[in-house]
Amino acid sequence: MNKWKKTLRYTQCLKKVERELTWDLFVKGLSECMEFFFYYKDLTIDIAFHYENQERIYELNISDDKHLNCLLFKTVDELVSYKAFDNKSLFDIWEELEN
Image 1 (tube, rainbow, N blue to C red):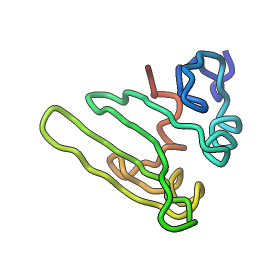
Image 2 (cartoon, one colour):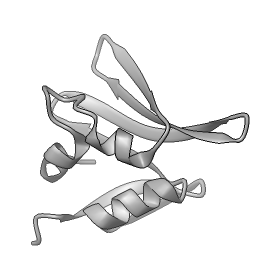
Image 3 (cartoon, rainbow, N blue to C red):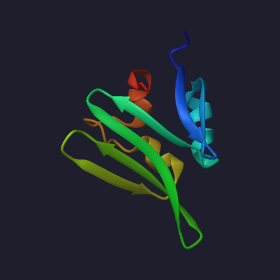
Image 4 (tube, helix red, strand yellow):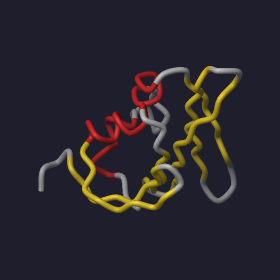
C-alpha cells in the first residue's frame, strides 16, 4: 500500500464516507469543506470548520480522556503544518492516523 494512501472514514457534506484517501485528497477535501475524524495514539483528532463573518476558520480539535485543545487556523496550509503532536504536524503523522 502506498504510504500516502489509507482507507479512512470522514464526513463530506454531512454524509459519512469511507474510501481510500491520499494526502493530496485530504488537503483538497479540507479546502472543499470536508470534516475529518481520526485517532492518533491516545488522542482523538476532529478537523472541522466554521465561518466568522464570511471568513472560513479551520478547527483542529485534539482531545484525550481529560483535555480538549481547540486550535483555529485561517488556511489549510497553516492547519496541516502546525506542529501540534509532539513537535509533529498532521503531515508528519499522516501514516499513523487511524479511524
